[in-house]
Image (cartoon, rainbow, N blue to C red):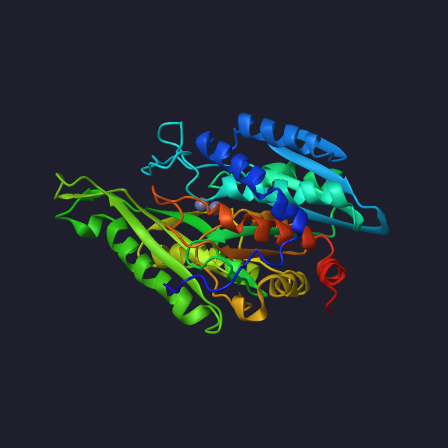
Length: 404
Ligand SMILES: [Zn+2]
Ligand SMILES: [Zn+2]
């Protein structure tokens, strides 16, 4: 680990640096009082009242459940509307740290830093409401239920972008894999689509000593599992990538060594990084299973469940955010070709509707979803400036610092 070699908050907006202590207190209050999933009434209520106290023009609660939206209108002429999104939910995990802001709720903690994301967006909101030195409007989106609850989809289905249309949308996530002050993204797929499939192979059961009378679903399933591996190796473009993993195989009863069962079930996961590959993988899992099973006298039915789509940055918006990041911490601390990851993130639902970008901001420390994880408050001024400047692309920073 290299020692911290530069003041990564140096170029953060001075006003945001002034309320760093307030944001730290807000963040630690969220950390002490975590809420899981889509039901985050305390957190959402605090966010709404803080937005009102900051002088945000409009505050809307109860969007898609406990989602909160704030609107700030800029003082300069223009019609650009930009969305900034923070996730706000915690995880069902017992915290093991002993710091003074440890979770007060048993079996529940902010182990992904969404307490920090909420504080960061509140910091950007306070700054934008105070200065209003931008054209158009900013839509502040505080979203529960990121950790597997499709909270973003709930807000969209409840009319988020109909009521608050935006031309661009941005979000950030802390990263323990990166040192504080390092910022990373790419101009395409950041995170995978994470889907599940269940294949039910139906045969004809009977006495295992008379195989000619049966249609064995276990043998058919074995062939299906082998054949499914040809999707990635033979059907997906080798310059693309995908994962098809069969993770569970259930048939018969371990005590029934002489019973050929009626059915066999295969359960697995598929990870893809583009809508085209996702469509292909879904289609071919179903087709290959059905045809292989039919060839062996069985029938296969596939249930393919789409969970989160892939997170795909649009290049123009990714560049806006990367350029701002470079202004803040220097080009040498910005990775514009960060490797995509096979994990899921429900900001993907927003990027399906609106161009935008998702960026990772380094914070060091314990990995996410670990019981010792804690968001690093030191990066809040930098992160809040990154989002606030995202409102107006590079121009904001050029005005502020005179370069460009
Ligand atoms: Zn997480
Ligand atoms: Zn997270």
